Structures are given as structure tokens and as C-alpha cells.
Length: 322
Image 1 (tube, rainbow, N blue to C red):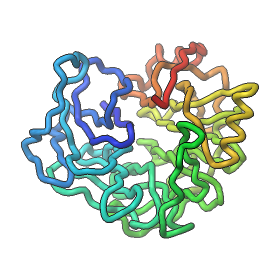
Image 2 (image 1 turned 180 degrees about the vertical axis):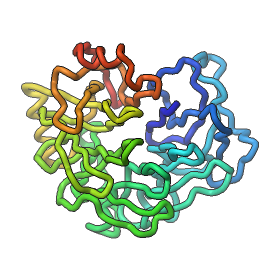
Image 3 (image 1 turned 135 degrees about the vertical axis):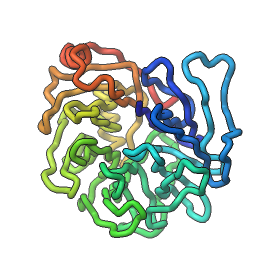
Image 4 (image 1 turned 45 degrees about the horizontal axis):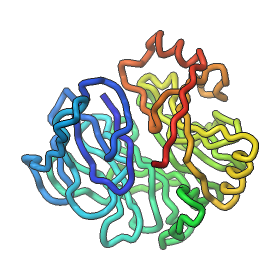
């Protein structure tokens, strides 16, 4: 059962989920596969995984184990399709901002697969695990983008220099999939055909798009004012689930002003699901769940209850940015 998502500035943890639900956890987590032993560590070999992080008050998760032990920020970790390793972004020496690493589950060191230039984010394996995708600013500058001072409160940067790249799993043969002067990131991949879902500001707003694995056939999926991002495919790729804001009135004016300065404030997000069928997501297919960073578990594939829930428009707002 897949369930990785990130909380920045945290180690990576491995846990077993007995509730079979996806819920926010105050650490970057990766769910343990039942089909194999997903033991792992970070930059130092810890084959026995002594770094168990188990709170006696935790009743939903068991066997919580730390995978990264080094200083630094490790985030956005996602499984290879064969379950043998993770791919993640990490800020660690000698680099000044995030780069992309593959994290083996045999206790060996993370392997750098991005260029070491600029800033990177949002990496993912393509089906077959022979290629990876990620976003990077290196084409615009070898140096890190300007760091936010948060003078406007808790905001996320929307770097227009981000474009999406595909490369061989070892980082070689790097090719650009998007080539615009607009933000393009938050890419995730369809397990069945390698199609890529991503967020971009190419139309002036933060909207969802999809494209083929070679960057062709780009289709816009959302067009409602507000942030649409952090989307994932269902296992059969017939549905997507994502986080969104739907500001109105003064809140919309503030959102547009911040976006004009390359910022977004994730203070109130809702989780939407839709059966988009590779075209614009129809509003009557939207539903809202109490998850800030959503992933559809495999057992929800072609589930009539979930499909009806998506069509019902049931709403439950949630607050993020805590």
C-alpha cells in the first residue's frame, strides 16, 4: 500500500499501517510493502534499523523506523514501482539547496541523480524504474534561487524557473519535458502508461495539467481560480486526487497578489478527487476529504463507493501550514 508524502525538514520514516487509511503524519513517511523487506537507512549503514521511532501512544502505526540519519532536510520521498528503493529531494552538503537522490533500501548511501546545480523538487520514478522525472531550476542558473524571508507569513515559493526533466535512473541522458518561463513542478506518474500529472502557472494560475511521458499531448485539467497541486493518480489512472484552494472575495485578491510575486499561502486547502478522463475535471465529480496531502490507496481502485463519493460533492475543509 503506497502512502509517501512529505513534511519538510524531517527524517524519512518507514511504518506499517494497520488502519489502511492515509492520514497526515508529523514526519516524512513511506509505507512498508507487505511483499518484501523494505529495510533502509540513510547516509550511514544501519542494516539492523536500530533507529526505531515508536511512541507508546501511537495505536495506528507500528514498526516505525527511521531511514535517514544524517543532518539535513529530506523530503518528498516516493517508491520505485518495484518497491526496492525511494527517490527523494534532500538538502545536504556540499549543496546549498535541494537535490534529487535515490535512496536504496540496503543501508547504502543515497545516490545523487540530479545535476547538483540550481534547486530541484518533486521527483518520481517512471514505470519500469529505468527513468525518473523531477523539476529543476538549473537551466536558469547554476545557483540556488533566492530564499524566502517569510515577511508575508507562511508562504510557499512558486519559482518560475522550474521546468520538468526526465533522465535515466542514474541521472544520465537528461532531457527537458517542459520548456516555458512558468512554474512547472509537482509531477507524479501514472502506473499504467507513464503519463505525467503536474502543476503549472502557464495560464496565469496554478492549475493541473497532464502530458505523455515524452512531454507531448499537454492537457489542462483545472481552470477554477485558486491553487491546484499535489495530485496523484489512482492505481488504474482513471481518477486523480489533489489539494486545492478555492478563494473568493478578498481572499482571492490576496491569492492573486501573492501569486503575482511568485508566492502562494497554503493556509486553507481542500482535497478534491475527480474522474478526469484526460480532459478538464468536471466540477460535479469533485469531492473533498479531510486529507491535506492525499494519495489514493490501491484498494480504492474501481471502488463503487469511492466513485460515488467523488460524484457526490461531499465536502470537508482542512487547514494546512501548521
